Amino acid sequence: MKLKCFICGVIIMSYKKVVIETYHHTGGGSAKKIRARPVKGQDFDTSMNVECSSKMRKSYPVGTKFLIDARVSSKEGGTNFLYSHYESPYEIVTDEQAQEFIANIYGR
Image (tube, rainbow, N blue to C red; front, side):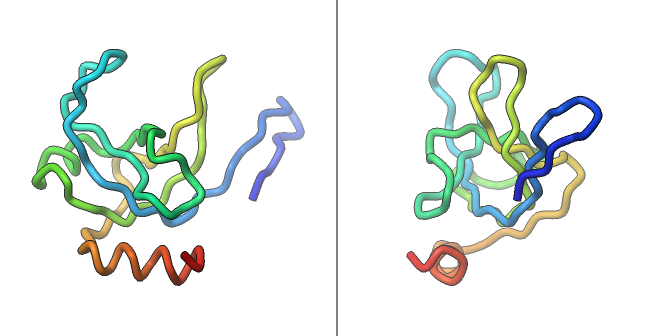
């Protein structure tokens, strides 16, 4: 769902449940060694970055999947990314649970 701020005109996306996974970041553009990205099969490109709790990313093995509440965001002139507040609750999910969630929500 998209909402438009009637004062400033900025489009505000609502939060939705998203399955993400952590991975080792080796490219440029970020000093973060462990990043997160959406899992395939959802409405998000798997190359999209996820801004979320660094404690969550670092506390579990790389490749761990999480179910989070996130919204699409962007910084001025930048590319879109998923944003989840660093204090937002999250759930660790298995590969099977992730695929079941995606199948139930997206029919894939």
